Amino acid sequence: MKKSFYKKRWFWLVAISALVIISATAFVIENTYDDKADEESYNQENLFKKTRDSDTSIIDKFNLVKIGAGGNSLKNVESKFGQATMTSNTEDSKNATLTWQNLKGMDDDVVIDITFQDGIAVSKSIKGLDIDRKNDLTLADYNKVKTNDSYDHVIELLGNPDNYVESNGIVTMTYTSDVEEKIDDATTYIKIALNNDEVTSKTQVNVK
Image (cartoon, rainbow, N blue to C red; front, side, top):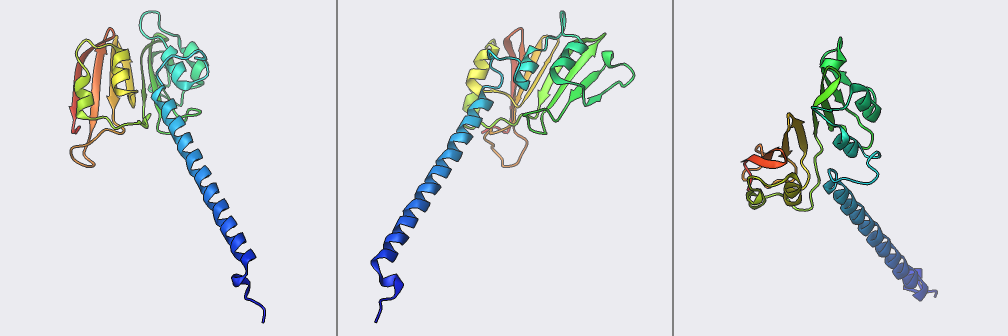
């Protein structure tokens, strides 16, 4: 009588080989995904840092927009971002807040607002970045930020903000993503205000 195929040595050799190949493939896929996630997190963590190729990134273009005295013209800003999605004054875009959405390479929630007076940019903001942080921000991190700290030092301590607003020399940075909460699902954020590159105030809500 012939042996059943599952009792033959070749069957088990093939089965074991297949199991090894499947396990190795799963390992490679999992680690490749983890590496990609780490890379994306790193890229987000460096959004607001200056780069040499400053004309390639939406964030870099946003950083290059000058406001106030010597601010960029409407034409200059449109050369960076294209035509605005919305305007607060359809009859006079030179005296209005223009909004850009659905920006290439950015999440749909990311919105840039730039306000113009007489065709010159006077304030700007970028919101909805939803930064994926390597470590959650805690109350201990918040407490490290001191009055008179510089912008760069705040970025070193907390990373990049999810919302950034600059107007009349005042920069306001708000952190909402990956912040440890005292109460789950309650409003939670850290807000830092700077004037002339120095921290002037800070607030936190529900941070653990």
